[in-house]
Length: 197
Length: 243
Image: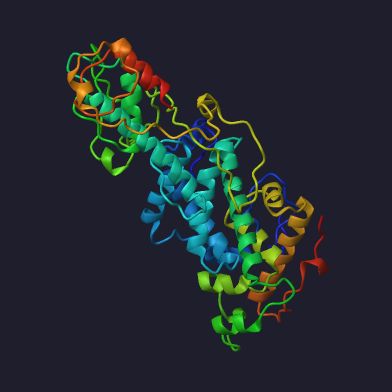
């Protein structure tokens, strides 16, 4: 990831509508944002991606902060956009994971334990994320792929840092157990496991 | 400190995720990275985003972005284009001996450039001043693309902030952003709370065209091409008075 901390005028360039700056920023983050919305189960990830950057273009004038704050700011926009999408579609529930989703991706006899972790692909990662609660899924992605700090992740999700740490730990433990081939419980609501604000 | 199970130990709130602390999950992390593949139509989307960003910054014609505020930005773009077109006609009507003062010429050229209106040859030249690369009309300006494409540098010290009136539109349907002061460049831009559209061109008056009239007696803006020359000061005042 390019080091923006020394690029003091990068924010001003974005605010001026500098095409080069926008092209650079889009190239840097489009994939990460797209993966984020995919991991959150957006029905039309490409459409959400476009909406996120369009919203960023509209709001960049009101952005206050340094260049290194742009990444969490953009993911915040994506988070809210997905929340709108979920409210509208009511596609995903935190209380249960539909077994048909997993069956479509992996037949019952496909034991993750037989699959070496280093042979997983994007589809396999998505399938494993399905075993997590919504909050755990989001924490894992924001922390691992988006490379955000605990504090940034907590701010985006409206949670406490402690809650984020707890979700991360439980999520990774679940994935670990799954890769180890142990039986997996269906994901329960985060209220049973994590602390909330 | 790493957890022997590979799940990692306590983490600082302000540092990124340490993948090396979770060696057992390295394959899973790599698979997650595969989710972050850039979109196939990145070039197309980037063009839309560039347009939205330029419009939001007041630097180009409006395009519908699909984000819901297309009509607002479209209206601003149309008003700006109408102003620029009127200015272009005014400038085109000037004879070789009548040129706008340099500041007015810069405004006209800048507006026309940014909204994609081609000025007549020489219209962007100020009296007695060498050609300014920042105000020269660029190829492709009529297509609506911004003429200056930065190549490695983004500083434009010779370009003044464009004072095109913009309506301040909120992000309808989106979570509200906290109210924050505008950036310095945008504070300089005048805010217009729903101003009037530009004046329509005056009806044709052939008698007026053939009758010599002193500049100080002209009271109506003559936006027709080829109109008789008028006092440069009067025109510059009209140019400045226009939003």
